[in-house]
Length: 352
Image (cartoon, rainbow, N blue to C red):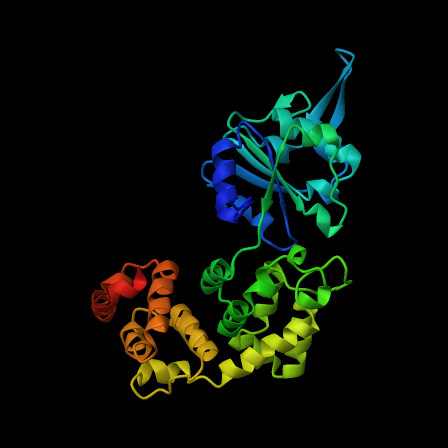
């Protein structure tokens, strides 16, 4: 049984039980914890994220003197209570790094769904996110608070999960192929590697690395690889330095070997216009890049010719293309394309 949950599993848990209890999501740096809020329905909820490292006690509520009644009342931050028109979804991001006074001020928000004397709208959800304590970056909670919340550990995405996300977010095909090739050392955990040299890309508390691989830094590095950005920069040394600034020099060097391979693939125009003549890669990594590029770039006008080209690849590569294109391209024309339908009919067994 795996006690580390994916982002979708955690969202499901919070969405079902988050009104009645508070979850604190612990996870590796850059694993996408803060992205959970994007999965909530913004039409149903007022969704906000609070960066707790930036808040002081006065950001939670401030005193207001009622001179007529000779009393003080506390006015809550409107970010936390909204306008009352719909329930709140509040992510207390980096709650483990908040100062002790801020943590104390936010405890009623987390545990009782109120800011001082003002209750949150009925049906509101509050949860927190913080880094793993083992990463040694200062995430601390008081014992009495720990006993009143539920700590859930979020895992890194698997290579296949991140690749599916990357296909939908314009991540370069060379980056996706490299991530699949180095899956364990990219999406693993430093907990599985006692020696930092065996885990050369990611964060390791025994090695002071300023830049390292996380799902977040991979995406930032991939921006440098976009065709229009690289051609505009026009200097491979600049691109290499920028990528190393996100994921470290060792990872950048290994990634760029895949980029150089991708640069030698047949042009996209040739695949679309002359699918029966365009060269077919002769190694697995290049084939994977070709498939990922086809998933991202094909459209309704080019899809039939792309299918012609894809069918010149080995069957397992064809199956990867068919599976991914259905997941990534939600348009109705994909399963209705005649060439695609014919392929599925003839090869349905390989997609099971």
